[in-house]
Amino acid sequence: MTVTTRCQGCGACLLTCPERAIRPHGAPLLVLARACTGCGECVEVCPVDAIEFTTPTAPTTPARTPATAAAPSATAAPSAPRSVRR
Image 1: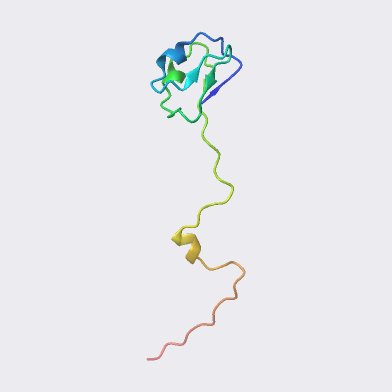
Image 2 (image 1 turned 135 degrees about the vertical axis):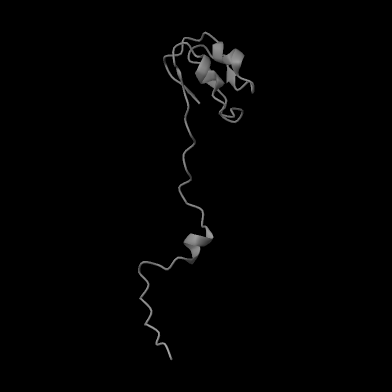
C-alpha cells in the first residue's frame, strides 16, 4: 500500500487496519510494508482516496522452471532429421 500526498492524516485507515500496519506519521500516514497483508480495508475507508494498492516488483532474475530449463536454446543448431525404418 502507498499513502499519497492526498492524505490528510484523519486516521480512518489507522483504526481500520487489522494488522496495525499503519502508523501515525503526520500526513501522509506511514504504512509498514512488512506488516501489511494487502487486505485493502484501508483503501475502502479512506475518505480522500489517498491510499493506493501497489504490488511488489518482480525479481530481476526469473526463476527457472522445468519448462524453461528443458526448452531448447534459440541459438542451438537444429538436429538432423531421423530416418524411419519400415
